[in-house]
Image (cartoon, rainbow, N blue to C red; front, side, top):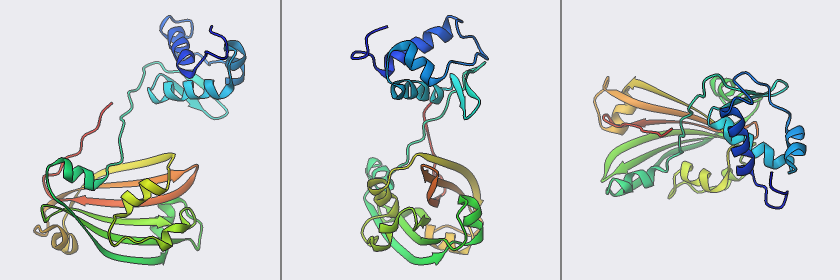
Length: 233
């Protein structure tokens, strides 16, 4: 292999992939530890970690704490889902974007949210309700809860002009996300906000994000009838 000064994570990734494809490490093989691989390749452990992390994201290997890294029998393609900025989405449609803050309250986290995010008793969250419009037509109703302990600066943030999603993406990184999609029917509140009839079918996206194990936010985004979502893998 190349010397340490020239060796990068891509070199490690290519070598590991080559060994998997040539069946030096066939499906089910338990790979050497990061420390062992770093010594073998003559590089830093962090370089090995990044290479293995990206191979895991591609579904080629499975990394489990205390269990080690195992070559997958059938690589699983993982969808890459980017957190959208709704303003950008609307502008990309060549439509004029408008935002409105409907409501904002500092509250104790309700029981269902504590269970959803594994928040301790007594946790406070900022509860926000917002509307996003495309050419003055309702596009998305957003209801969001932000963990104050994870983002204390949110208490002083001004959401009258900028949506919480756009603010969070600029202020707080995240390491993990959980996303759920569902079809719901419009109740009285949603039908009023989205300008549709009660009982109409709507698309809802729910997303929770964490930073190094600490919950940051949970959001429900409900869209006008006809909205579709796409991803890549």
